Length: 185
Figure 1 (tube, rainbow, N blue to C red):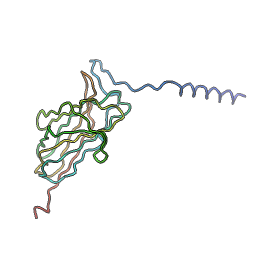
Figure 2: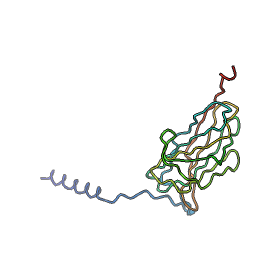
Figure 3: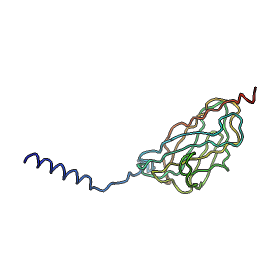
């Protein structure tokens, strides 16, 4: 009888916990009033279909996953070149974004602004914030790949929607460029 009583009390407690409403994660509000993600997005990948040096009009794809527990939508992403033999210049007029990955494209996303403070800092702001539990890819168009081969690194930072927000560093996107030895030969 003691065993049945213990089992029933465990069952009722378990059912009670399971029947509690599931609360969505809320954004974090800092002491200053600034908003941050409860769980920041993740940089999934950085890639380009053309990794030879000097190729004109190429696209660099940066894929970001906004987790279900983010607590806030993704409003803005900044890219900062932190390494490479030369600065890569992006064409702000040809930047685009879409839901999904570079090989599984979904709906195109409207951009509110694309701003380059200098050649090393590039900011993309979505017209409508990307909601949690979405994967989005930003296509940064370049005028050309670098002349110099090697590894080029880009720091990626995400900002939630809101007036006063705090960006969170997502990671480093790595692109490697090679000299086309076939053309040099």
